[in-house]
Length: 150
Image (tube, rainbow, N blue to C red; front, side, top):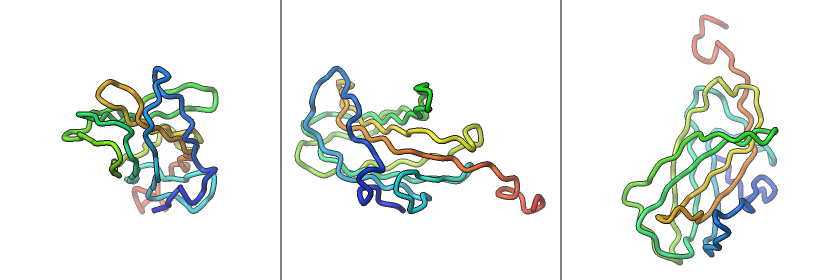
């Protein structure tokens, strides 16, 4: 698992806060499994589980959290990878919390490089924090799934 906070330029925490509301929340760290140790791009293989963990301190209390993960292509086109409420996710300000989720990149984006944006929203749909990192999905190789193709 690569800790991206060791590479300060590997992600951008200046995502636009929804509605211009400042939440005083802090994103402390993000870790992405199956990434190389490269400083600027996270390389992942299609068809393999990728675990993501993010540590944050909320700036205010909220009864529930929502997780959004988007792909932002080089031409500005954005599409949702996942959007889900997080059960039993009440948080209090000043306490460190960890959000964990996993995704399996499919071969549709194989060979593509894009920004992956992770947003955590409060119960009023305000962004508590967001982070972007550059992801490259390696080309899909049939031998990854079936040794017969080697």
